[in-house]
Image 1 (cartoon, rainbow, N blue to C red):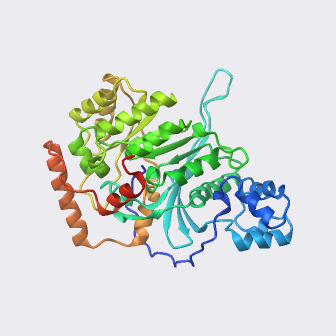
Image 2: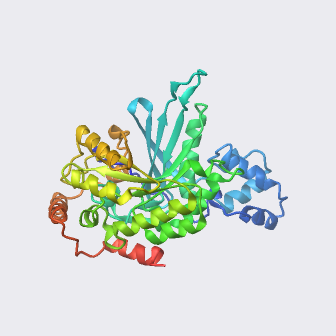
Image 3: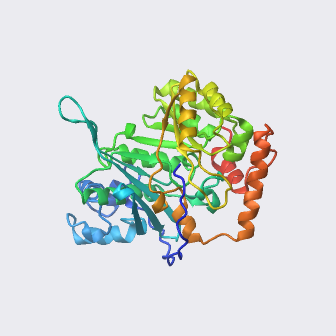
Amino acid sequence: MIEPSTAARVPRPSKPAPDSRPGLSGLPDGALEAWLAAEGQPAYRAKQIRDGVWRQNIVAVDELRTVPARLREGLERDFRVDTIATDEVSVSDKGLTEKTLHLLSDGALIESVLMHYPARGLGEDGRPEHRERHTLCISSQAGCAVGCPFCATGELGFGRDLETAEILDQVRHAARRLAERGARLTNVVFMGMGEPLLNLDRVLEAVAALSDPRRFGLGARHVVVSTSGVVPGIRRLTALNPQFTLAISLHAARDPLRDVLVPINRRWPVAEVVAAARDHARVTGRRVSYEYVMISGVNDTDVDADALAGLLRGDLAHVNLIPMNPVAHTPWQASGPQRVTQFAARLQQGGVGATVRRNRGQDAGAACGQLAADRAGEPPALVVAHRREVIVRQSEAALRGDRSVERLPADLESAVAGRAGDR
């Protein structure tokens, strides 16, 4: 997950009128053809409409000039061409990172981050060894129920699941901006706001649209779906044998500490999560990525590195180490560069591959939930102080090896019971 910066709080935009019409980009297979038949329109119009949505990235039905006016009127009546009401883009890293705050029709705020990676290195044939990439990190929920204390989205709490079209329209908006510069999106990662496996049906529908050559046409191997450890969701994915990459937001290899850093660990402990991921790698043949936010003095010790190496040694797995960005309600700081490098070396010596990731877009608030948190307003000082006290108490107990006896947060308990279950 992308970590927050400390951007100034700004007023929330006015709330648009809710719109119950389904989004065109999220329609399941056959739905558009069935609607056209009911309207007395020929089936070939479906391709024209899909091309408008996915090739031209239209934002309004008036832009769909390849179909007759009467059909445009019907589309306007029954569908939304775009489920995103407004965008606000912040650019940082000398143009390499674009953080977008999306306002939805019911006033919900979500975020996406577009990261540009220029081509680098030259091979013997004079071509770049590493091609230019454009990666988009998207949200699957408005807010998040998991409540990781180092994440700004956790501060917001859970709002609602996103519809399939609301997920996909984040991609369409980024693709539109890239097209203006003659570029194309190369990778999509579900690592923005929310827990993707607690909205799994919609996420799977979105991945299907992204990989469908009639729609976005991005290969499934260029998609990453992340989870904080929803074991039933991982097992369900394994049964589907997908070709996209599974990423686990791990952040600790010891249960007492992970209970604090990733509260869902109280339901599915770390060994159970890794066992599910191990089975996933075995069945799919796809390497699992483990995301590990580095927090100074909390989860970056030699003991933590050895525990992580022991947990993953021999697995088809790779660890991405990400220095934490500061969050207003936590007392923690990022691990220093030297400690991160030492931690990575210790993992590698223990037989586990590791890469140190650089944070992107800190000056643009390129963090999961940061811009939305800014719009929500500064939390009261007493609330922040209480959160800090709780985190300090919990983390001190975790470092002593004491497991958490606290229940899951109410939002998370409800989400897990309602959609993940123990199936």
